[in-house]
Length: 304
Image 1 (cartoon, rainbow, N blue to C red):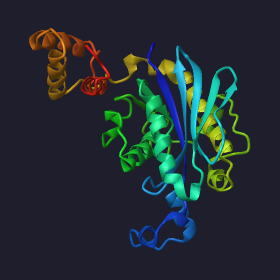
Image 2: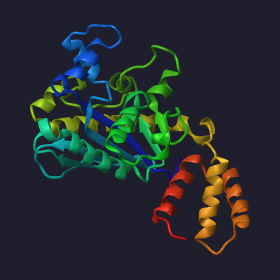
Image 3: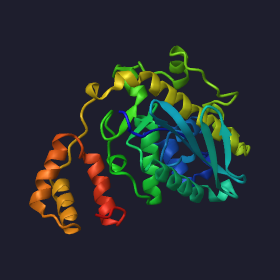
């Protein structure tokens, strides 16, 4: 994985019964022929990507075997960009939302746009429990807003290792039911220090209602940092020879890419057929990166 920009991603979300209209409230409370209490429904909403909203997203960048920086995008009713300097910089960028009760949906869209722009150059996304929560939430919320997504995220599934995503919770679970633990517990067992203060996941909802937006952002940053440190501890067990090879491009992708390149350059399609087949054989062209190259060629971001 040398030279690959690794982006460690963690999100925080918020959901409230008060934001539901009566039809949605009635449907979710009685769905599956079960009459839920408001307390039970509130707990379910916190995991429902159709209802919850992303209020903070942290990205820890890992390069050359170390954390080089952390970016946090978070909903706030006020504030300016803040940078903290530790052994690496942490940049907190508020996404302004003057009235979270009225404008949270619009602010979430801006936050997601900032996040995807930051992740555009990442070759590997690392999460903790991201296959079950973070990536499905980011995928569905972005689709609701009509945002463009990387092809591997837009797909209806996120493979465990391939297509640029590694879920450390899955990796450590050994696929055994019941053998998945919280990030905090796992980090303590690996001797990784945590610096979360008094905030924890159960307090995010109340903290957001109380306007403690920066406290949420700091908590989010610490989760991303802890996940990045865990990734670095496990990195030697994740060397390429132990991971499945990336998926090769489909025949249609390869044909489309070849024709695009040939149409924008002086070479002919037969020459590029041979060249790109050689690239595929050596793992240079993959299903993930050829989709990005095709998009870049079509949108004029890549000139030949």
